[in-house]
Image (cartoon, rainbow, N blue to C red; front, side, top):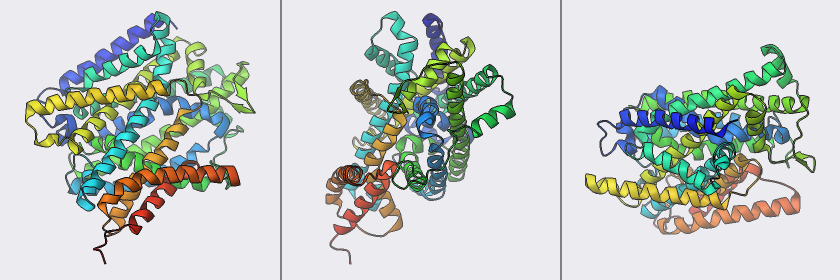
Length: 485
């Protein structure tokens, strides 16, 4: 596909985002960046959150991973749905009743100042790595499809994306993102639906034949009952619950959007609607994955295989879309990747900025001029952090989505442990010991998983988040406040 045409598409798309930013920035208050003035329609928030969760990772990794992991990811999705129910009926009421801007303020109310700072710090680390890894995949594709042809190095491609994101988000932050993410979700869904249609049409299949081809394929295996496998149903389902709670319910990025809704009831409607649409969308991505492998098989397209496994599976969807599916599908794919690039990072940097300025800089007590200055400095700082992480992981291979969830198990585990202990017990922890426990327990979990794999061929998989959270809870109980009876 012509790189100049793609560049024109990017420019037009960015112009549309700037137009949205212009209108949403009108009459913006000092708090618009962080709270959206709590006036967002819940339907818009729910739809826009799909794009932020899907990102370029889901867009590319899930279809590709089908070749090695079949439909086992659906077990994880089933667990997610249960996790969203917990968020809806347990966490959202807490956040609204306390009128939180940063959700980690709850930890100060429940345990103390050091626990609060520790929880926020773990979010900052988790979100920085997650946002960087999500953007990495999209940036690689855009670099290959566009910028490489103009002799632009990869690091400059990343800087261009980050600069564009800053331009349309720095004024009104979450108030703008609620609406731009809605647009970006639309392009993401259009891209996957159009891709399914193109492959269906090329394979000369009707809609019913397409469904039959997917459901009768060898890759259509949903449940894995091998207890030693990382894809075991119980591991996937339970970790799906916990990771949904941690990466959505305990994530300032996702909850900041939810807290822009007008009321607690509307925020709950938002989460329930979002979870249903997301589950359907992820199923579509898995089905697309089977169709991509059917397409490659029929037309003799050679895929990289090593030790009986497909490698570089994240390359499958981009390779076919840009080289085999025709101009319309290629344009749609590029728009989907652009949407994924922007939607996965704009809200992440905004959430990081909100969390750091509220939790560590006490921005809420500053005057208007000082708020603006601090916000811009912190926004720029986290953009630099994300850029550095991307460059460190720029040579990584394999499906990025597995890497993200594994990292999340270590970084969100202590956070999950703190919230579960806080919500379901009245225990008063030793506030001073919390930072040490939250640093040590992920290391213990990592070493335990290493021992289980090497000695017993047992992989915790995504269940590392459960082990991490339980070890954190146990340690906190052991060092609970001595004044407690």
